[in-house]
Image 1: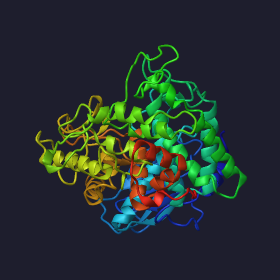
Image 2: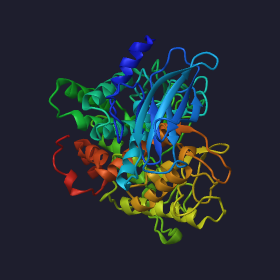
Image 3: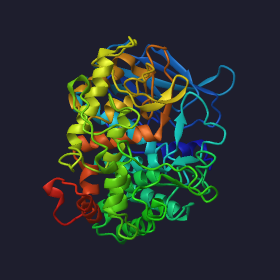
Image 4: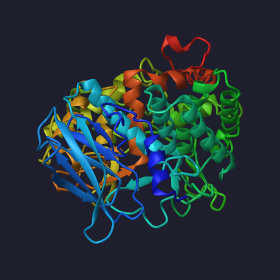
Length: 538
């Protein structure tokens, strides 16, 4: 809906300032300005006749110089060239026709040196916005990708990813706890999401990898991948169960209704269908047109552990413990004794046994499943994931390929965009591409080492790697390649895992689910005693 300029302005001024040093709008300026450490973010309402906007800056409020001319109504000004701990005056002008300019407003703002905690808050907040501001509008779920450096692919703007959306649910919960949105705002978004998912295409209760956010129809991920995707659905349900735990004991009837709707979705998921009639293993895909043709059994170790935990925990369609031990763990064949760089891997990493797989294997199953104290007869999962991370870092520090930029403050290989398409980057299969989610989502395992990467990327690479939804998906100093692109499945774990380090939010919610506790016991897992009491919700 298009509003008159005056109404647009009114609506814009009502938007709360969510973080940090945003100046009060006591001067009634339509320009909002937020000062961080090395950048200032400016936003203003869209002018109805603007062709471009010009941003100018001054240190005294009188003598202005141009910083940029853009078409967007959000500008992030990295001010390394101006210094730090600054007091700046900004002016935003709209060009309507020719070279005629109209001043939209001015604003004074300050920057200041950030503590590590403030820097972590900033990174989390920006990344959270991918799932709050950048969500597909009808479904409320996470778009598969957002390209700042170009338009969405023609048929891609409304395509949502079920797995990435599951991670995004944890990001939204973190947003509530951090005060970036209210609990009511969060519930309204979750209601939209859950209602959409209930009507969207499902196959024996299992969602596909991609859905059209406008229609709820499946968008095939591949020719035969046009039906139920058990693993992506597991990532999604991991998040939904955390949302259920967050709201189920709240006082409002809407909260209990939301929890009840999630229960129904959970109970309708036919995990046992994905054993192909009772085999001792789970299979990833089923298609209404091709059946089991893809024939992809889930054999550990990789990112899919959470699928077995949920399948064993299902209150209606659970699988036997044999599926886990004989299928996933291959009757003990999952064990290994590899010690790359002196760090022991207890589990064989499929296709990457010697030095560990891409780092998302240490993230996706552990957004809600707490690896601290999590043990079974195959591994201590905290030690295993920490060592996996340290191996990945050690490879980059040693840098056998001699890639530019690699070191103690720039490491992290995982699946992401690559210089030529998409790649599962890992030690031994390294293309010189750093993926920020690798180190950032490993924050609980390596907080000091991961903070070094955050500081280096923010202070030294700046706008090349950091934008409106946080750090971009991937970059390569070696190739001078800095695309401004995001992927939901990489952004979500950043917020979720940083919040798990800070407060344990996602871990505490998911592990409080009584079905999960029973499922873990069924599979022979030990887990922290604090979760063994009856679930009390939030």
